[in-house]
Image 1 (cartoon, rainbow, N blue to C red):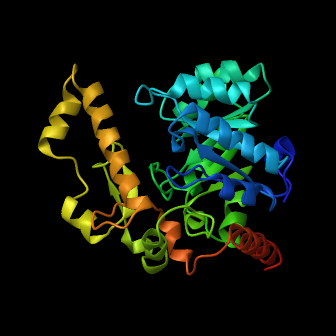
Image 2: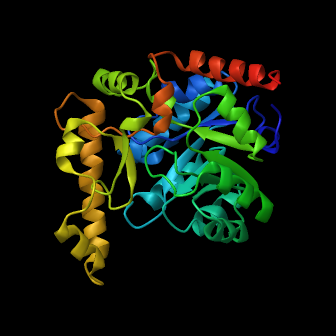
Length: 322
């Protein structure tokens, strides 16, 4: 399973355990690293700089394999500059940027040899980050969990491979070794996988959340703009059905107002993140659980090691299937 990405990162398999808000923790990251793949966690999973530093230091102490940190680089993340400074100082192996202009991240990481991969959903933005000096793009397709794109991987990956010279990592809809092979066959240099790892024993989310991942299927995944104003995929629980998936009249008006939209988006994002936190970490009837269509392939709660083992075994079997 050697690709340009595995050679760049020095890993066995071309897989990133995707950074997942409120989910990714040090136990999951270390398990991923020690079983042949790489992984990243959102800096926002840690409330203080001291906690972020402790997490990075713990991973470095327990594994010598490469890992990364996901940074939200727009104005909604007021911790962004301090988080970037910490990641550069502690010399993480790579940074994944989301929701903003990655120029500052790329400029500061280049000098330290830190790789930068940028979330993209189309060719236009991908070409912009390539021009800025990004090492690769995370091609977020329409089957991704959380904030998904609009294009299927079958269109997005070949489009980016044809027009870019940098690494293309496909994100969304991968839960089996067969799907992994199909995505690499499209031309992807690696894949980013999230949803199936939420249902791991190392995952810190509530048992109710994990049980939902087993009980619900792909048909139960819906997109909502109620959390942050940006479309986000969640499980269609009874509470989500009651809440609705579209912004209300007042929210739409605020987002259209030239002077208020910046503050409205920030307040909506903060409110949405708090809702996700309550749902992910505790039992509540107000359940808003992020997941992608890959939920269809979750049938039990297992250690990260077993999930990776099944992925790689199925990939090898798919290679030998005529």
